[in-house]
Image 1 (spheres, rainbow over the protein chains, first blue to last red):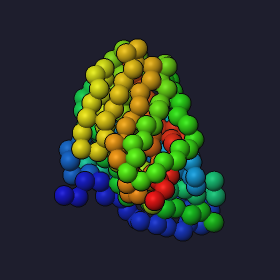
Image 2: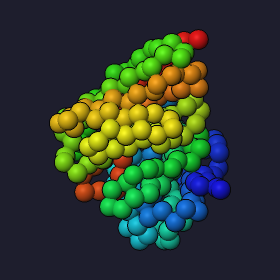
Image 3: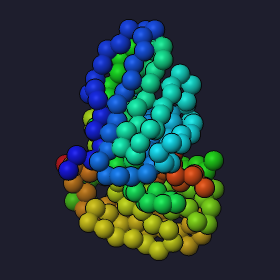
Length: 114
Length: 110
């Protein structure tokens, strides 16, 4: 059982470069999310998607974009990375409609922007 | 948006019960109460959720106040593996998303 797969596991990125973090789920969940977690802090929601073809902004969407072309994939793109985007990024999906009852998380992508 | 309040940290001893509180005073009548935990260097994992009644599963128990303005996650016999950050994210009304706050960092002493 794969669940949520994130790639890459870690990445060092030069400032100004474009980067796409990949997230794939095999559970056919409708809703998917991207969070960032800075050292010692909680998770902050970047973007979410309630179903394929729709996306929404979370708490900290600036500098990030997402797309949801199909149910399984939810990539997160940094168009021009900045050092403040150094963080651990978690992708998640949820069971339950209309209210999420259980969220499944990936293992995270550790991104360092230098 | 709905918000929750949790203590920043708590400490307990191995094999003793642990009661983790969460205040969710802005919760609406149909919002579920969720608890997650995050072990070191891992993504968060689901623990339990409920609406109005107390809930039990293999990991923990959830006690929900009658007015639903607060809840308590109960670990009946803490082990060293229960050391983690525990979150009670409020469900944003009308949307399928969970907004996590800072959580409670639980330390378990041997």
